[in-house]
Length: 175
Image 1 (cartoon, rainbow, N blue to C red):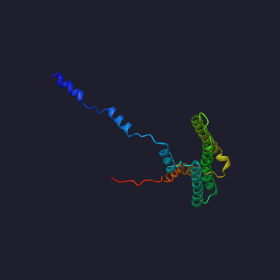
Image 2: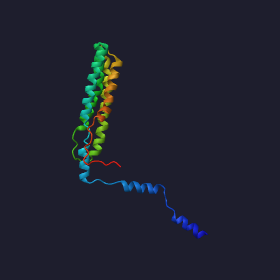
Image 3: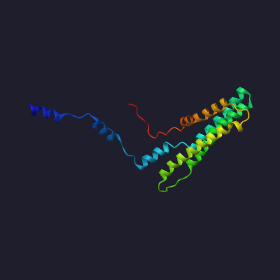
Image 4: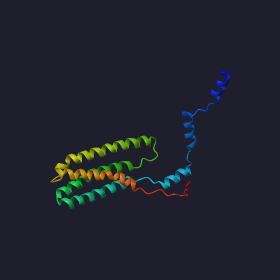
């Protein structure tokens, strides 16, 4: 009797976490250099300058819409200043992040530090511009300024949606 129980225990199949890990390892495949180059060719990175350009265009459109609805120059200037409070700091971040680090040792750490540094510069410039808004913009309209800022900030997502679609090199078959 004990012998048959031992045989049943030995013949059991383990469907626990071990088999899931093995399945994930079997499905993972390291790319060759050619496959990685083909993927990079079909999926180009999104330029931060394109995002800044889309933000600037959105800011100008927002300014025009505010002027068309309110016919107040103070509100239009407020919207334009709100757009500038997003676009100028974003341009500083893009400039800082797109400079060439080369193949220097520690470039990954320098890139991470650079991103954090330029992000803090971006936040600082945006806060400084908002603090200066009451002195710089005559007849300041906070609602127009804030709406323009929100519209320009949301352009990051729209720029990602407008990203070029990858080129399909092989036809896909439907099952």
